[in-house]
Image (tube, rainbow, N blue to C red; front, side, top):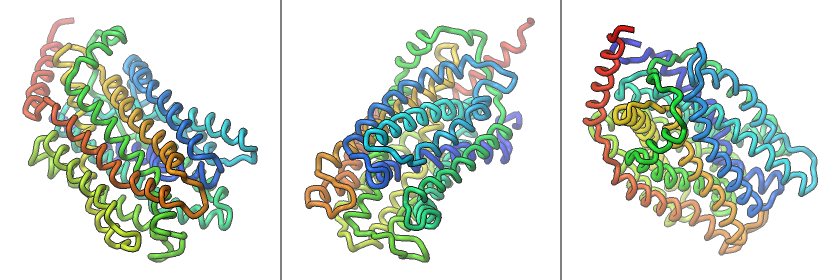
Amino acid sequence: MTETGKLRLTEKVGYGAGDMASNFFFQTFNIFLLYYYTDVFGISAAAVGTMFFVSRLWDAVNDPLMGAVADRTNTRLGKFRPYLLWMAVPYGVLGFAMFANPDLGASGKLVYAWVTYTLMMMCYTAINVPYSALMGVMTPSSKERTVLASFRFIGAFGGGLLISMLVRPLVQYLGAEDEALGFRLTMALFAVLSILMFWFTFATTRERVTAGPDDQASLKNDLRILITSRPWLVLCFGAIFTLAQVAIRSAVTIHYFKYYVGDDGAPFLWFFDRTTVFMTSGALALVAGVACTKLFSDRFEKKHALIGLSILGAIGSALFYFIPPDQFWTMLVVNVVGAFIAGPTAPLVWAMYADVADYGEWKHGRRTTGLVFSASMFAQKFGLTLGAGLSGWLLAAFGFEANVAQSETSLLGIRLMFTLLPATVAVLNVVVLSFYNLSDSKVLEIERELTTRKAAASAQPA
C-alpha cells in the first residue's frame, strides 16, 4: 500500500476472490435452494419457508455477536484475516453436506435439511463477517475503499455468473438422469474451489487500520453507539428491503421459467437452456455494472447514485409483469439492462458501511469495524430471512405443487413474486435511503481529521 492508502492490484484481486468463494454457495442458495428442496429433495414449500425464516433469523442474530468477537480478536495475523484461514474447510464441507441427499424418509429429510442448513449459515457468518469487515481496515482511504468494494463485487457477481451459467449444465452433465446426484457432485466441486479461494484471500491481504487503545470496551456501549448512528440505521433498514426483494425474486426464478415461461431444459443457445441463458446474461451485466461503479461515484454523491439506480431497478422488475411468456428475447433485454443498473449498487453500499465505521470513530473515539459490518449483515440477512420465508409461504398460499402443471392462481403468484412484489419492496428501499445524511464531502473531512489525530497520537512520547 502507498502512503496515500492506494492498494496493490494483487491485494484488490485477492480480496475480490473471497466474495467469489462466498457466492459459490450464497448465490446457489438464492437461486436454486428453494427449487432443490421442493422439486429434488421433496420437502413442501411451506415447510421450506418456515425453515428458511427460523434458520436465517437465528443466523442474522449471530452476525453482531460474530462482529463483536472479531473486533476483540488479536493475533499476529490480525483481527479478521485469521477467520478466512480457520473457517474455510468447515464452510466447504457443510456446503457440500446440504446437497448430499441421503436416503431418508419425509421426516428425516426435513430434520437433515434443518440441521445442515442451520450449521452452514452459522459457518457462513463465522467466515463472511470477518471477510466483510476486512475491507474497512485494509486502507484508511474512503475513495480506495470504493474501488476495493468494486473488486469485491466483481468477484461476487463473477461467482454469481458462474453459478448462473454452470449449475444447470453441470447438474445435467454430472448427474445424467439423476438430478440429485448432479447437484451433489456440482456442490462438491464448488466446495473445493471455495476453500482454495478463501485461503488465497487470506494470503494476499493485510490489515492496516488499527483500533484505539479502548479495544476491550463493553459490547453494550458499542451497540449503543451503533444504534444511535443515523447513517447506519438508514443503511440497516435499506439493507432489509434490498435483500428481501432479492431473496423473493431469486427464489422463484427457476419456478418462473419452468412453470410460466415453459422452459423444459432443452438446449436453446449451444447447450444452455433458456433459464441458464437468462441468468448468465444477467450475471454478465451485473459484473459490467460493478466495473462502472467508479464512473458513478466520481460523478455523483454515493447516496444520490444509489437512489437513482434503485428507482430504475424497480421499474425494470415491474416491467416483467407485462411481458408475455413467449417473448423471451424481450425478457432477456430487460433483464440485462436491469442487472447492469443494479451492478454498482452493492459496491456503493459497502463503501458507505466503511464510511460509517470512520464516522463512529470520528464522533465517539471508538472504532468498531467488525460490529458495523456484522450488524449491517444482520440487517441484510434479516431481509433475506423475510424474503426467503415469504417465498416459501407465498408459493404454498397460491397453491403451488411441485412437478405438475400449475393452476392460474399459482402461476399468478409466481409472476407477482418475480415482478411486482420485488419492485414494491425496492421502492420502500428508496424511501429509506432518502434519509441518509453522511455526504461524501463530510466523509473526506472525517478521513483527514482521523489521519491528523492518529499522527498526533503516534508523535506523543510513550
